[in-house]
Image (cartoon, rainbow, N blue to C red; front, side, top):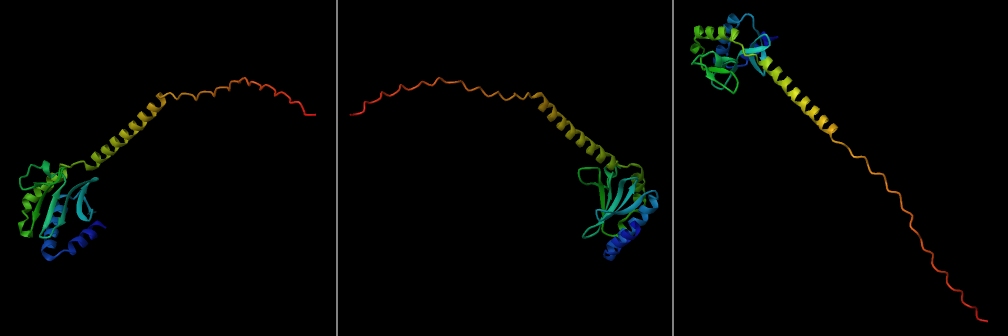
Amino acid sequence: MSADSISSYNGALDAQRAAICEKLRKNIDAALPQATSKLWHAIPVWLVGENVVVGYTARKTGVMLMFWNGQHFDEPELEASGSFHMAQIAYEDAAQIDEQKLAGWLAKAGTSIWDMVGERNAAVAARKAKVKAKVKAKVKVKSKVKVKPKPKPKSKAKTKVMKRPKAKKRAKPK
């Protein structure tokens, strides 16, 4: 599936960008035989284990080659990208690709792997623990609050009703 989908990706490009992608793909496959390839977020990537290590994407004027842990390679040609560990280099022509440098970067990509999956799993676990702690704290607070029992209704006091004095009978006229 992955080889066909990457071939389809490359085949959908114009001749110049397709040539760059095919040259990159050939070098990546040769340098990272242990990696698996696939389309991920609509771009070709190579994974070592569960972690993405390298990929490329076609741009308007060329192709961007990306290394997910590239900022740790200490390579001046690779430009830092994003807030994580990614670094990249742009190619506008297949002739620009220095296969020796590329082989060195790919060797680093295969061994200097950013554990993206491990970090994500740790972050998810930390978030779950935080939510669980909040729920636990709310339950604890609720249990500490003493609910006052409703007061018993006061019994109605009997009020003394005063009787009205009886009206005097009037004498009937005779």
